[in-house]
Image (cartoon, rainbow, N blue to C red; front, side, top):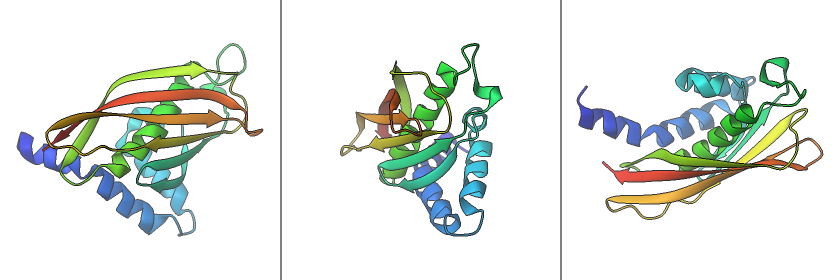
Length: 164
């Protein structure tokens, strides 16, 4: 496959993910299956085993269960597991919102930790995509909360966008 063909395929990733989500989300076990397929597509992010609860252009909600493999020596979810969850939630929101013919790649990521992450965590990723005539930038964000609704972390990802 040529570089241009690869770029065009990558530029439609959001559309493909949304089509799979819409097909699977209402089926018994469909959310679980979609989440596992996403983990195969993005193996590193799949290591946290987050489950997609909602996906639409500009919004993604994920749940990550607390488990030993994600913990640090302080008996809380490791800081990088939180960053991974936030990047995945904000990235899904951004990718799902990309218009046809536009692709994006994260340029930088920042995270603010508010409290230790313990128990099941919910990440709500949001993104607004500006018009892209050639290249552009946008920030996608994820708010990670615990079961009590308390803020655990805030992740901000700067996306580099380009028309292909």
